[in-house]
Amino acid sequence: MLRRFILIIIILTLIVAGLYFGIRSLVNTKRQNEQVSQTISEQLATSSANSANNGGQNELENLIPTSTTTVPTSWGSHNFGQPSTQFNISYPPNLIVSNNSDASSTIIVLAFPKENYFHWPLQDDVRITITVSSSCADPMVPQNPSTATTTFSSNGYSFTAIHGNDVAAGNLYHEILYTTEVNNQCYSFSFFDHGSNGAGLYVDDPVLIQKYDSQHSADYSQAVSVFDSIVTSFKSVL
Image 1 (cartoon, rainbow, N blue to C red):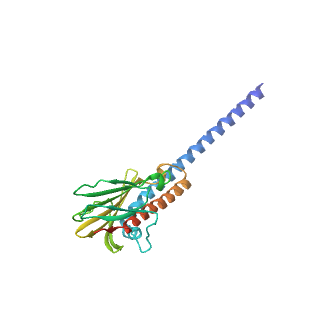
Image 2: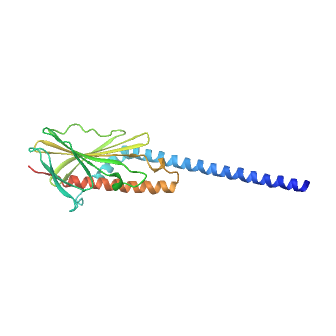
Image 3: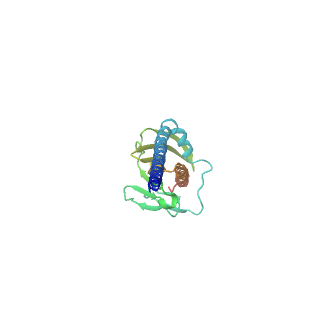
C-alpha cells in the first residue's frame, strides 16, 4: 500500500509539474508575441512619422501622376460643374458618386467601396472630393508632423500637389491634394484616406502582420493610382 501511495504521489507530482511548466510556456509565448506585436505597431507609427518628416517630399513625388499614368477605356466619361465651370472626368463605375453641387458651387464626392479596394483587416475609408471655386485657398491637409509640396503637369494643365499625414490613437490619415487654375477658376482634387495604424492592432502573429501590412500597402497604392488616373482624365469643357 505504501509503495502504491508513493507511486501515486510521484505521478500526481509529475502531472502537476507538467501542467505548471506547460502553462508557463504558453504564457511566456503569448507575452513574447504581444511584445513583438507592440514593437511592430510602434515601428509602424514611427515609420509613418519619419516618412512625413524625412521622406515626405520623395513620397509625394512617387505618388503624383507621371507620363505613364493612363485612363482605362472601360471608365465612363462624365461632365460636371456649372455652365461657367464645366469639366469632364472619367472614373471607375464602382465608385459611389455624390453630386452636392448647386447654382453657386460644385462639390463632387467619389467614395471607394472598401470591400472592392482593400483586404481584411485593413480596409480603409477613401474618398475623392472635387471642388470648383473662384480661387485656390490655403490647403487644409493633415499637418502633423509635416506636409510636402511639389508641382506637375498633366493633360496640358499645371497642378500644385500637397501631401499630408497624421497619426492618432491607432488611426492613420493621408491626404493628397491637387489643384489647378483654369479660366480664373480653381479645380481642386482631394484624396483622403482614413485607416488603422497597422495589422498589429488586429492580429498577434508577426508573419500575418507583415503579410497584411504588405497587402495594405499594395491596396493603398492601387487606390492612389485610381486617383491619379481620374486627375489625368480632367478636361475643362469651356
